[in-house]
Amino acid sequence: MLPADFDTARFVHDVLAEDLGQGGDVTSAACIDDGARFRAEMNCREEIVVAGIDLAAAFFRALDPGVRIDTPVADGDKVPAGTVLMRLEGGARAMLTAERSALNTLQHLSGIATLTRRYVDAIAGTGATLLDTRKTIPGLRVLEKLAARMGGAANHRMRLDDGVLIKDNHVAVNGGVAEAVRRARAANTGLQIQVEVDQVDQIEPALTAGAERLLLDNMDNDTLRKAVSLVGGRVPLEASGGVNLDTIRGIAATGVDYISVGRITQSAPAVDIGLDFVLLP
Image (cartoon, rainbow, N blue to C red; front, side, top):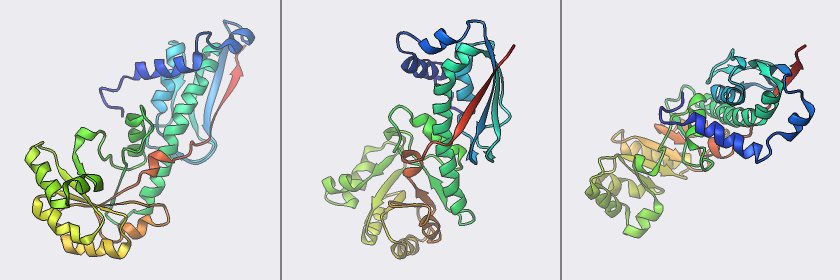
């Protein structure tokens, strides 16, 4: 479900405006009779996890308020190739004009959800939770993080004001982990303080200074196990850096609580979805 403050109408308007330009869909206007009606069926051509189905439907409704739409699937559904995702009946010109915007959105978001589910399945039963990151396409973060949730991940920070995350550059400027944490606590933001560490010897200074969560960055599995043992459950631990489908289960088996993966939003390929039209008499 989209956040309550997400402006669907504005998003749809802006995406359509990008595609329509000043002259609109000149090809459909020239080739399709104004009163022509289409029946259409949208199908996935590979196994996918659905994300963005209601948003895709909104493009068709924006151009033809009377369009009839049936969506037999819902966001989060994992469906096999050939599944009908949407059935439509309405004005032919409007359908053709909205087609690319609707498909682009659904293919991109479902691509994120589908890749995310593969990562989630890879760590099933380990107790670790998959997290997304802020590595998103500018302007699409809310939607891409929604898609990650549909794939089974949990959202990390949505914005920079969602939590204090002290990273290596913050540490370097402050001359060490402890001082960076001390200053963050003195700021009294009321937010959880998470600290990125890339060496085991940074852990105790971070915890002593008041870190409430640790991000274990680019550590190999042996080092992760040492970190888990040293922390002993005092704070949640998140592993990050260089994670892929071949390595994530081994990382999860070290005992970390969370694993963050930037590529589920940054590098997910669009899935293959098609829309086939039939002209009604």
